[in-house]
Length: 312
Image 1 (cartoon, rainbow, N blue to C red):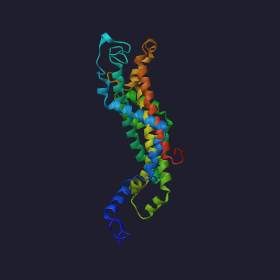
Image 2 (image 1 turned 135 degrees about the vertical axis):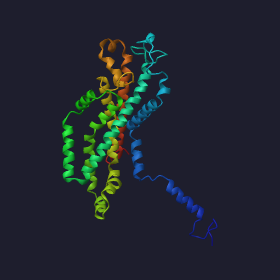
Image 3 (image 1 turned 180 degrees about the horizontal axis):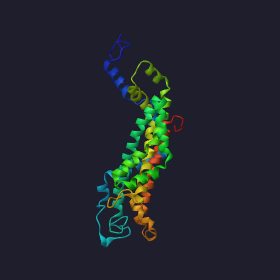
Image 4 (image 1 turned 90 degrees about the vertical axis):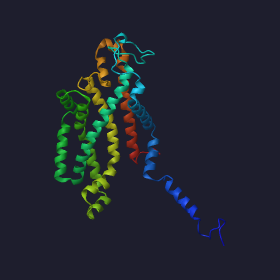
């Protein structure tokens, strides 16, 4: 006897079996960790709003020459302090530069500082936190006591002090913020390593003689990526605020490079604060926009990584 497809009973046609296997491999598993993470993340409304805001911000920074349309350092003294118009949609500043153009190019500065600074202190924290949490003992004590000493000093005052000594430029600001931003994340990573190190799969790896480097990078580190990503995302907002504060105080990005914090310095003059709101208000809104978007998305990532959060 043969089945209706011409094959003996109990045997499938090879093509049909291959097709079923292919569809099984390609179909997303609804019980996989990745699927549950993306589902939980996509259901976080504020997180999706924050992601959309971040996409707009990144698009604006990457394509600044197209979005701005005008050179941010081009001056026209005949057009100084002009209110918003069809030619200058956000008006002009005291020397006739287009406010919209400087706002758009300022996004490049803020995002660059945030990304580089967070990248620097995340790298430092990963090294110190991993070593401290994995080896423990005297190594842990030395690293944590050094971390505690750094955390005893007001971080922003340290940043201001160093920024006042070094030449004020964007590269120094990136390095300064990066160097002084690692203590908090180091403690976070150390705590995660201590938690994961005590699990059975790490104990088994140690017992069979797996090298420490392999245990750290292949077994423990992938399990602490989630909290590190969340902390880095939220750290971007803090780095942008720090850069804006330094530029506001005159210790950050210098003229003629556009910067949101630098633009806000004009608000220190009462006549400008009252009579020319277009010169400082857009930068204030842009800073709030950037910080809120990163905080919203960071909160969404934190909730999506935490299975105890009820987002389903």
